[in-house]
Length: 280
Ligand SMILES: [Zn+2]
Image (cartoon, rainbow, N blue to C red):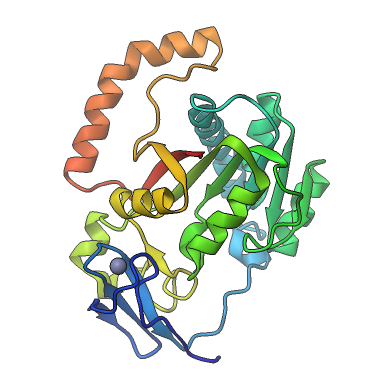
């Protein structure tokens, strides 16, 4: 329970941040660059054990229903990256219970997962997936092993996002694609009442998260780490590498989805945002 103090902004290095909300255990600040980050804390580190994944008895049915939805969402996200990079071996960083691995295998991609949670890796292996225990700060893979890296709700878990991105760059081939999903720092509920919102509260995500990005701050971080953010912040409306029936359906509903996406971002209803970037 040693207090960790980030005196300067994780993104721009300035120290002029203003307090956004304060709790006895931790403080969140907003930097002039737009990044919201945790300045100091004295809460114990989060353990990603079985409870974290919500699969205990009683929640099992809810989990099974969610699983189908998550695999389908992952498929769409992988297709987003395939609009910008050729198919190849995929690494899912923070692979959780294997939703993205399943979607990758369904798309015919060789897939590997990595997670700091022993429980998550065990569950993935039981399903027959390749998965390793490891941190995104030190990935247990050789340089240039992957064409695609998926990183969903991972980057907000580190006070050292630049190091994490360098490690991603190391395991990616040149021209490889990375898909990033993070909570949207501009989300209307989080902005309206930060002290009451679970993203900031120490008993909820406040303990495990270190920064909240917006499409602008994430793009800056990626560019500075030599990634080209090619699709921010919305999902693609049409996927080049989707099957013909799916692509036809996507083209038909694209105008409607476009309007819906714009409306949601205008009123800040997006709770998360997605970025696809290519390794330069
Ligand atoms: Zn800053």
